[in-house]
Length: 308
Image (cartoon, rainbow, N blue to C red):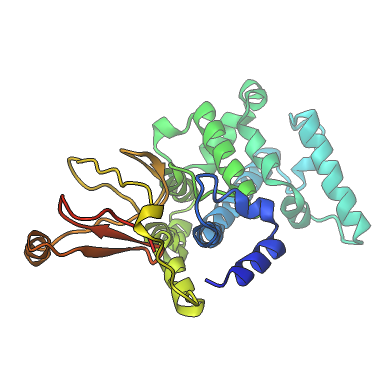
């Protein structure tokens, strides 16, 4: 890829932002590929996060309206809200007034933050009893063992933390439990509404993007911005390769622990009998690793390997 193009992209995005994707010493093209993969992962999580947040607030709003007999429950003096929740409601109403919007229940509910709704599962509302009422009415499709305030508090706080990272364009590509977090979001949506659970599966593209890894982005670079002049360093300039025998291949498409420590990306190459025959005949095999570099495989006694 054209170095000038990479430098300009880095300047536009901020060098510090891209540096977060090359903490392991990755070359600029790989760092940019990771950045784009992170962007795609965040985009794919938008739908489930959106549905989870909207479903939660509407389910809690409905339950609170039933308990206190009014959609304007937030104005009722006998609702055991925390001081912070009361201040949050006042701020939401003030913003509506500043925008010259009528103070209706629908507008107030939509104006309240995700953190406001998640806070109904904390210890304050466990003591007041309101939290148990809301869990019973909002999560009617949840298994009984999952209707635990402490479990729900931890679960929704984790969802909120991921939501904030995604919505503020922060790095999530390095999360080793991202699949589990995604599955958790989809699961709690089903606890609120089986119909929304079906809808999120129709919209969901997370698994496809996650499993695709860096390859699609590196392929895009190779197609749109090929290397102007391929350069192969002399054999003497490359360090000797370290080869370790491992019992079986592992998922190398994302950052994992390898025999050489934590590594980003990679491929699993399967050699056919014909390949092995060429090796035994004294030939060298060139392995294309994600269009990023070339590994040369040879039998003992021949020259070393060098990247290109």
